[in-house]
Amino acid sequence: MHTSLMLRKEEPVGGSLFGNFTKQTGASRLDTLVSAADEGNTPAAADAEDAAVPDYRKIDFSKDPEVLAHNYPTPKKAPELLLSDLKQRLYDAAMSSPGGYDKNTPIELDGKKYILHLTKQEQELLEPSVYLRSYRIKGTAKKGTIFTRVLRNMDLKQAINQCHFSPKRISRDVEEMLLRGLDEAKRLDLDPNDLYINQIWVGKEPYTQKRLDCKGRGKTGLIEHKNIHVRVILKTKESRQKFLEAKKERVFGRKVWQQHHNTPIQVYRGSSQYQW
Image 1 (cartoon, rainbow, N blue to C red):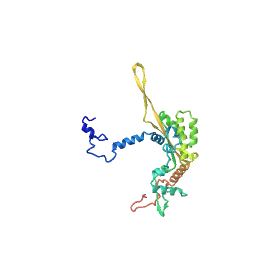
Image 2 (image 1 turned 135 degrees about the horizontal axis):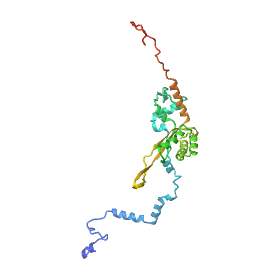
Image 3 (image 1 turned 180 degrees about the vertical axis):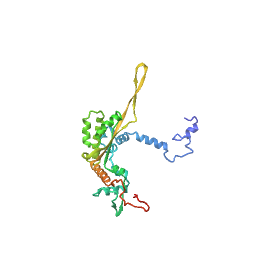
Image 4 (image 1 turned 120 degrees about the vertical axis):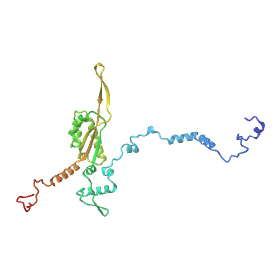
């Protein structure tokens, strides 16, 4: 409130001291924000805001397609992950041929001929396979290796039965892992009856639980509770047969060892003895 009578008479309606010198050209930013806040406090705006926010308590995330796609992504085959586009097309064309892949056989694609060179390790990686890994298992690598040796080169379902009736503690965790392999094989369009354990090994976990071991006369020791994990690679029986036949061809294709070279004997002048 102004004390001067003259200032009170000339004060504009808006209450601004500088009303005589400045003119309002429009609504200020403060007026816009205040009006927007007043409009947002209306019951209709509150109902619209509540309707826009979904009630997550009523949504079943176990059946939501986006959640399922995030938690269970579509698995990709080895050629899609390891080969380029051109090599993948060449490899698919070679595998679709009657003889399969052969490093000496040219592959015709888009009117051109190519020769695809793959090492033995690359061929093994590109074969249809399922990679499994267990969770953390309480135990030692020595005891785990003794059990996993029994499952080497065994059929998948036969290995599951072996784990189910085994008295070993580690067999329960290995069985659960192999059962997950059945589901993974179906997702990769592989026949579970045609799978076998190609590789299985045991590894040490970095985490080791430690606690004190109290002894007599005020002495203490340290007890370590070790953990391990199991890894498995499943492959098809067709791949095993293919590599066995390739190995036989290499063995039977070797030249027979001879003590002496099968070359003609040469006799040099000035010598009365044969010289090889």
